[in-house]
Length: 207
Image (cartoon, rainbow, N blue to C red; front, top):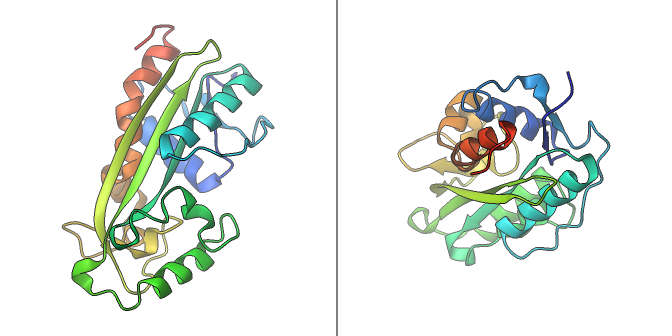
């Protein structure tokens, strides 16, 4: 079966998470219909946007152009209140090396070491973009508010999951099951909002 939708990511954990979010809400979408950019050998573009939405569109446009298929991309990160919204779009490379989760976490916790619990508010932000080869584009955003723990907890997820405790929870997102996290996450919210547009594109319609 030929793929019908490309996820513009080379992060294997994110691919699994996005498939899990999309499958129940896009009617008739088989997991085999969804492939990652890396599976098709699509290049990774330079993410030089200054917002999550801009970077999501850059990635989706590049993959749609390279593969000739509808492409979905997200850009997400952690916005910390006392850091003025940082790390923000620099979340994946906060410590210098892209994707070094342990170093990023360590640096962030060092920066917030003296910050009292009541001032450790933060949120995960996700912009999810859909782009088709003929130029249709749509972006949705999702947010998960919470408080930052003082040390990493949990083995699930990736990125900053071990330190964000969602509002109303005592666990970090890394201590939740993937299903629990997807139900409330910034990425889950953004992709569930995008799902009807994906369904219409795959049906040959437009939002």
